Picture (cartoon, rainbow, N blue to C red):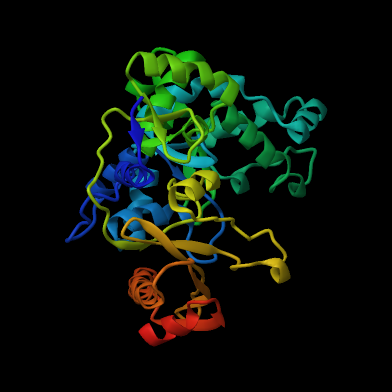
Length: 393
């Protein structure tokens, strides 16, 4: 069995994620967005907007500054993408829609939804009819039943019904400019040639998604790769062995990792990774925290739900990557009213050079603030990097 060093595994992983590619030197356009989406396979969504919504960040990390309105238009109006529960809530290339029909067919309402639908058996048909007749619509566009007050809808039963229909694949969704889900029928939102593709059963879908997850990660443990598309581990495990026997993925050893570990047979091993960028907490490079710790010796936990007095690094902390290593972390907030980027904490990792990390972070913060249209950078006092960062800025 081939043995791969940790350093090589890290370069393979970052190469697979597009960090070996040159960033555009001119205007970023749809071609670049499409390339990033195909490289990643999906982009996770999240409602937190304390700094910038997370789905903008993977494109920024790989392309540099770009116009967010251009990305919004491509994601939501081009017909090239759709949204589903493919990791968490995520946007994916539309040609992967058939790979998720098995999950749509197997989805069951969660407890609250089941109780609601039992009490109101007409609810799903009523909401589906409204989408059919008036879609695309948001939850606020729903008409309440005549026997109910408008307060019965909002983010109550109407939203629950829409989400059940969305999970079942009876309706699909994209996002409006203010990040609301815009629901419509698949017949109107998914290209006919894709919608009419033959059914892919769960086993075949698992096989294809495992191969795709290995390609997107480049290299990873069975758990790492299964997590890319949130596949069930016991169901996925035998498929890994089959795919390795068939040569579609390759089992390898990585120093310090517990097996089994798999690599994409076509993965590139860059000689080096260069450049500086901030990463989203939900970038595929770091979204599976155990893998990030194995790859980078970088223990990372998001502290949004930790009470403020107990937070170690801050509320919304972004990892700093320099030349293929995670060397620091910074807690950022966009003060849009005052056009300021607030740096509430800044830390460098143990064993890194303070001056070099501060210089890299300072330059990155200026680039990042400019991308967000913020004209100043305001520093707090928390963190072992803040003093050097203040000098660099």
